[in-house]
Image (cartoon, rainbow, N blue to C red; front, side, top):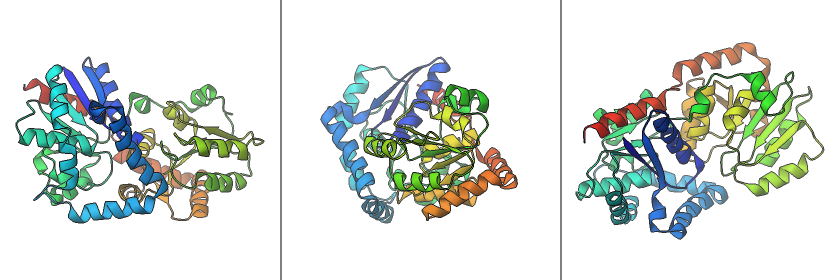
Length: 372
């Protein structure tokens, strides 16, 4: 079977979910390609779309939160939004691409291609099934105006939220957010620490800010390092934010217990090596930590869907969180010291995690594609 995964470069989470489906499909014997849909209009268009989104998120998060709330207010299954009509402009280019390739099924971890595919279905321009993967623990604005064959949800507790917004219940499959195979393998902390050249006999905190390096990472890292008085080590993954990485490298140049990294493809390995993870509540990173059963402290969210992600996790005891930076550090130290609290979180994580999400999604795509 030939599978097309359509994404776009507005943060690493959507792409990570797409890669998880692609890698799993290939392991299961299928041909799978992943494409940034906007590259069909050229690299300048793709960079403009991704750059505009990332720019607002990084430099004007409050504006992003306002836009998100406006989207929630105008989002409706009864009419199409400007987002739908903007993405419909990609329909002819995508149709031409599909005409040149013999795909059996399409899956997208992003709203924008879902809007384009919806337009194509309504106009008779799409002859193969199309599915979507939700990558946040909420129904983000405008999913209800899409009309795909099925929707893979992060959790069964979200079904009512999606149906209330107008997505048909029979199309909702709560399989979980797909993660790459590296995150579903059994954890071996000693081996991971050896590979990462980390000490075996000390507590280790992992600090992640997401692919865009969002948040007051330098201030948080300084506070955490200041309060680590028992030989703890800190790994900081800065994502694609090279400016923050340089600042942190200068700040901790003489501190051998702080390890500063930029973008890395070995996140699963560092998660295995750590005792506690501090991370902003992105859907993908939170799910990866959940699948790995790492005690989670959620830090500052990007206003909007990440706020919903944090609330979902905290309500189910999958993470702890605070609005205040110093309290976030205190929560991490408490988790490290309190065996009972870690055990409670671990039991909740085992109950709610879905490590087989990618496999179940590919099996459903086999069913959809096999009907052609």
